Image (cartoon, rainbow, N blue to C red; front, side):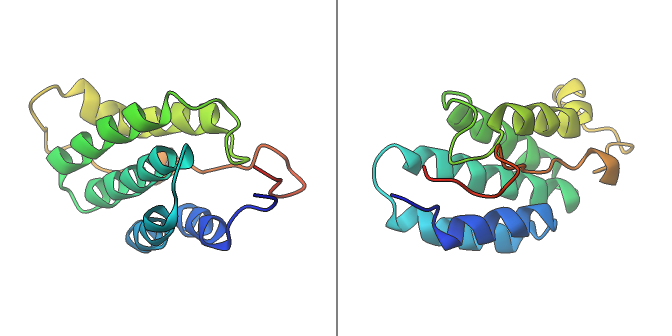
Length: 132
């Protein structure tokens, strides 16, 4: 593969625009068409988007579940992968979810998605997407 798929780039754009449900839809379509190593990576990004969607809608149990699933899928991949700073994203993702994670099995009323903590997916190469 010489260039990153357009659906992938669109999914990242939607994630960064905080259109998490739409991001999930676009990446899921790409995921269903993808075989091999990137398959679980894409699934992890989809789960990250779904986790953000649940968090924003107050479904803290669903958010925590998707957070764990996303991390489990994404952590084995090197950074960068598919030209995103995966290590940086995972740090921001964890920071976003730290209040949910700290709450253990309870969910205090004060746990809400904070705009300033919403993670951003950044390209590893600032000049734009590079080959995989």
